[in-house]
Length: 447
Image 1 (cartoon, rainbow, N blue to C red):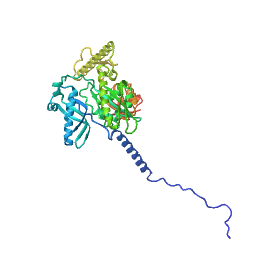
Image 2 (cartoon, rainbow, N blue to C red):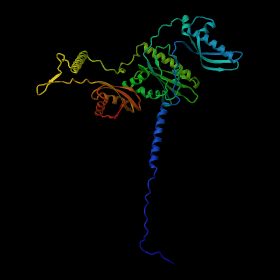
Image 3 (cartoon, rainbow, N blue to C red):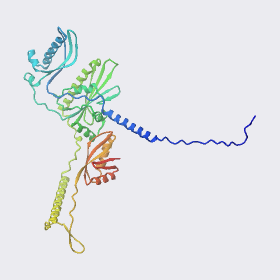
Image 4 (cartoon, rainbow, N blue to C red):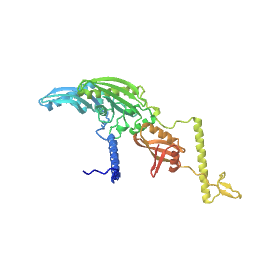
C-alpha cells in the first residue's frame, strides 16, 4: 500500500481577488434616479388627487331649505310636480309673505333644490329647498336694502374625526357643506378656497395653531383675505351606521380666539349632511353676531408695514432726504457744466487744488442706485421663513426684504431692496452666514 510522504506539503491555497462589477456605477446612477422619481411622485401626490370643491356662485336670492313634502299622483312624475308646487307654497308661507296664487308664487321661484327625494310609482317623498328671485319677491316682502359686509375673511373648515384632522387633504362632507352654502345674504364676506392644488399644503389644521403674523400674512395674501375664521366640526360616530354626535367650535383670528361652540346630533349617516348644513347656518349666525358686535375687526398686527416714526425723528429724516436731494442736484449740475465747458455754479465745491497749486476738477460723488432683487431660499418649515427674512434684513445695505412667493417644504422667493449691485448684495448676504449662488435672474441662498 502506498503511503503519502511525510513532511510539509508544497500545496498552498491562495485567495482570489475578484474585480468589481463593471456596471456598478451605472446601477447606482439608476437607483439614484429611481429614488428621485419616487420623491417627485410623493411631492406631486401631496397636491394632486381627488380633492377640491368649488364654492357656489354668490347670489342674493332668497333661499328656503328643509321643506318636507309627501304627495301622490297618477304617476311618479305627477306626484313630483305636485310636491314641488306644495314646496313652493310652504316656502312662501315660511317667509311670511302674503297670500298669493300658485302662478304668482311660481313666477318668483328661480330654482328648486333637491336635498333628498324618494320617487315611487304614485308617491313622492322629498326634502326640498326653494330659491326665490329677490327682485321679484321684495315687492311683497319688503327689505332689499344694502348689506353691510365684513372685510374678506378666509374660512378654514376643519373636520376632526377618528383621531384625524382634515381640511383639504381629501374631499369631505364638512368642506362640501361650506362650498354649497349661499353666502350672498350674509354680512360676512367669506373667502372659501377650492382646496385643489397647493391649497392642501398652504391651509392645514396645523396652520391654525401658528402665531407668526408674517406667516399668516403670506397665507392671507395668497387668497386676498384680511383675516381668518376657523370652523371646527368634531364628529363622534357611536358605531357604524349609528348616531353621530357633532361638537362645533367657531374660532377667529391668528390667535385662534374661540367665539362660541354648540352641539348637534344626527341619527345616522343619512342625516349627516342635513346636520352639517344646519351647523353652517349656525356658524354664519355666530360670525354675523360677532361682526355686529365689533369683534371681527381685522387684526392690526397682520399689517407688516414699517411702523410710524415719532414726529421729531420723521422731521429729521425728511430734512436729511432734502439735503441729499440738494447735493445730488448740485453734483448733477456740476457734471453738466464740466461736460459743456461752462463756469461752475456759485457755491459749487467741485474743484480741488493739488500740490503744484493747479486746480483739478473734483469728481462728483456717485449716486447709489437702489434696486430690487429676486432671491430664492429654502423653507423647510415656518420658522425658517422668519429666520431667513430677519437675517436678510440685517445685511448691510438692505433697505427691505419681503416674501413674494411662499412654499413651505420647498423653495420660497423673497424680494430684497438693496442699495448696490447684485454682486455686492451677494457679498453682504455671505457676511450674514448665507451660502449664495449667483445667477442671471437673481440669487439663491441657503444656510
